[in-house]
Image (cartoon, rainbow, N blue to C red; front, side, top):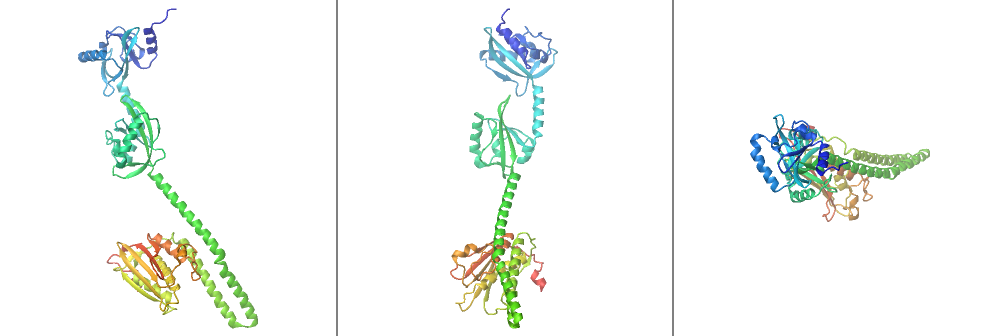
Length: 498
């Protein structure tokens, strides 16, 4: 059996290829065409063999073709022709078709030949269109970038995500989608990736941010995939906008923090209920037993005294429970703003606190607000009641006069209120308990809920409350609330009450 020549081996290999392929000799004649080439060029099987390649070149392009062939023969190397716009070729039926041609110089049986591979550029264009339609249908933003960092494709989701219109991003540098402070580093990453990148997520272990057309930055997740195209290596970037995801995580984290705080408050409440509330109930029970004994003995005066004492203890317990409920509801009740005259409200609270103790404390006020402002009046009343009642309660008996001072001012759109006194003050080692539930600093403290409730209300109204450390004697608290002025033609809630 005769051994096949190198040329015959080549021909057998080319005949099974689905790509149209020709072998062209040094004389520019076609030595072999595979079945796919015969079909593409509309020739009967084998009819191209021995014909000059020029039969496939339109008449008006033959002079140009000869010059190109001569140049290729002088410096033969693998190359692509017509990848961008297609190369006109003439078929056996006289039809002109647009093809993409690949040339590869080879030596067959000692003769320099050219292996030509041809594909219908219209078919590739249609395939590209189909591919782009598929990419446009993707739910993710997709961008294709060349090695210069230029965007060559952006699907509809990408243009919408970054705030552009379809087609506007193509031809623009990818840097426009990157925060300006990261441009230099990003260019280095592009060079490094084109130097040997593989499909992978971008920015592993780092938070990535993209830049919207408006300049707004937003968090993204990016996947990179290198793609070989007729124009060279490209990178397909798939982006997911994480704005909603990050917001959901932040909201979840805040909810977890709220639950942790509620659990801490629940533990504190359980402790208080088992100690602070149990003791008054035990005292009332003991007093009731004494009353029974006194009634049997006919001592009605003692019975009356013990009943009054039991009532006072029970009222104190009710007050503690109400404050506990108020603290629990403080962050959930609807905020109902209305015009409030702060000086009038302070005076109202002060009268109710001191009506039975006239002369034991003196109130000094300094208000420079210029009229009512709009806020949640019941909440502000509770805050003032807490601070003023504490100021009255912690009197220094060694001083001839107990003075409570309240100042209020408008500080750049914020209500700033200071409540101070010349009482016994708050020991430094106890100040960390001031705004905690059931944080009692001395025997004079109430249920330890007032300041915790005041802080929760201030927080709900968007302000801040603090203890002023700089005071040498007595105690001083300050809180701020956002101010919204009452319209000029409106009447304050206080005037309506009158």
